[in-house]
Image (cartoon, one colour):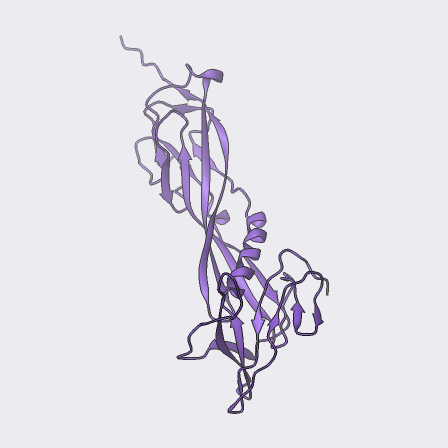
Length: 264
């Protein structure tokens, strides 16, 4: 299989206890690049995004009662935690794993998932070129597009693969009207407008313009809609966490009309 290099990760694996005996193995620090190699006590490994080797019969779990211990000679100080890996309830081995390992794999996957998250199809009613003063503008995203995006990254170790799945989930929509007023944010994809709804029904995702745009340059407001994605990760070691949010969206020209009423 072909390696897909995105980011190199340092990890630490050492057998700690086996068959009731205390055994100290060489510390194995991953530092290099390329497709992976072993040079004395140094293991070089890339983060990979292809399908990890089948490891369904094996589980990783932190040893209960074990504390994270500082790694001598690391600046700033790094920590490692003792895990055991059990396969088919028959084979069990113990390994020290650097605490930063899963999060650094997740950070690498964050870069990849950011590229996979596309700007979702944004809808408004009335359309952006026919908005009306005092008539609420609905904004939403089709529910079929409102779904999470996931990437699984992994690194090979002599004890088996360590994998992390990073997931970006759409969370909120923000509409910036461009008329000098504050943006409006709503949770979820919003509700599609239909003619049956009419102009008086209110939506959880809605903004009402109070003035027309004909006095602006180009006769429109420079509006924008953005989606905020929450990014989380979960590793095969049983750990989980959060990563920085992702924001996607686009700008639009909002032409806001003022309807004139005639009376007799």
